[in-house]
Length: 90
Image (cartoon, rainbow, N blue to C red; front, side, top):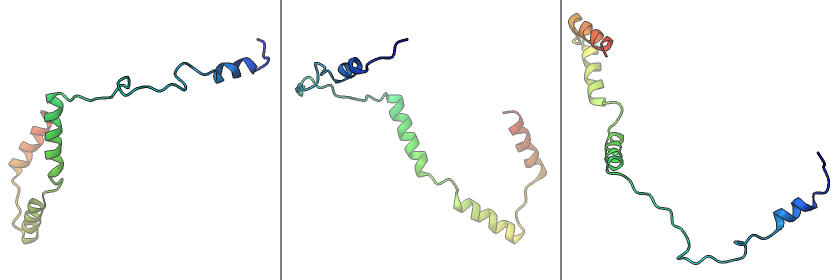
């Protein structure tokens, strides 16, 4: 391998290409565009609706807290077992 003068590579990189220095008319310019499918638009609408709903439903949380504080919160063992088995079958 011969490592010699870098003059040739300098000439290559500094030679003006045919597009340098020329103006491109507006008609020749390409414009980017985006077209969303109806599925994507539906997804965007659903996503915006979900984003507007709070992650924590304060009214439900406060109701359970009040029941726990009053000692009236009761969950039957049957309900617990049903929920456990529902999670196993998924």
